[in-house]
Image (cartoon, rainbow, N blue to C red; front, side, top):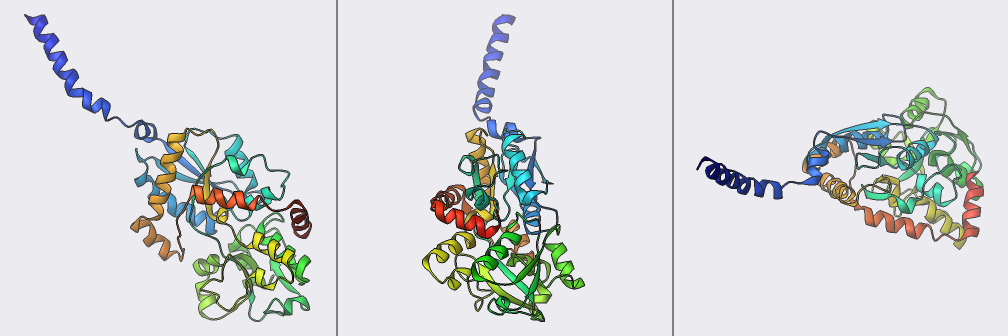
Amino acid sequence: MIQRFAAALAAIVSLALAPAAQAADPIADFYKGKTVSIYVGLAAGGVYSTFAQTLAKHMTRHIPGNPTIVVQHQPGASGLIAANNVYNVLPKDGTVMLTLSGSLTKRIVLGEPEAKFDPLKWNWIGGWGEAVNDCTVWKSSPATTLEEAKTKEVVIGTLDTGSNTHTNPLLINNILGTKMKLVSGYNGGSQVRLAMERGEVHGFCGQFEGWKSAKPEWLADGKLAHLVQLASKRSADMPNTPLLSELARNDEEREIFRFIQSGLEDRASVMAPGVPAARAATMQKAYIDTLNDPQFLEDATKLKFEIFPTTGQEVRASIEQMMQLKPETVAKVRKAMGM
């Protein structure tokens, strides 16, 4: 009798537990108690670092299991060191993301020899919109328009020579004949802006968002002059500043300038190939959900960030189109950028 009762009790317990077992979430089980690292290939304090920190603060709520998220900075070679590390060395279990920076993917398309990865093999998680880059100087500088910069020298602070803060103005010099003197080696946009205050340089060719978030008072007080902007269309913040492509003198220059000035990949996040598909899909959804999260958007607005959620598929499609650039055009871009 006791044995029959025990067997019946075991059967009842088994049936009671069955729904719980069936409801188990392998993704939540995996991420619970884990730490997810978001790698940034630039120094702390800049646009990409600040965005990653803001993303990390809110994204945990949108990942099943609510893992801890930390930001890891691994500066060097304008993001290339971090990218190679995430692609080739770090775990591919779904706990490592990378925030791509600047023109890194464009450099790969152009044949960056130190790149140890294929941009089409990344798991593209998503992006937060197109970066608007600009070359901006003090209004008291020798030249305050790109046309004036063809005859008067302005000193531009840049990061390392592989970053778009250096290669963009170098390309403009070599194609349009401007006389921007480039001083490289600064550790982030905040350091260049400090150099401007000290009188070491006249300006910086970086993201316009950096001015809005770091030095809004310079904008408000009219202390800056924008020479040119690089984006797919004119920014509402700089309606009277020409796009680089508008200054093209022929079809070939227009193709080159359009390649340089636009791209969703400048503000995208990835995971390495080999990450289990279900976890990559989870992170793609969590990323987009975070970018639409009212609490995240409140913080982003305070930081003067404009957020335009872009899916990983959309970013990848943009890169596929970018990779169709003709070999002879690639060679001319490489030469103009000093590659």
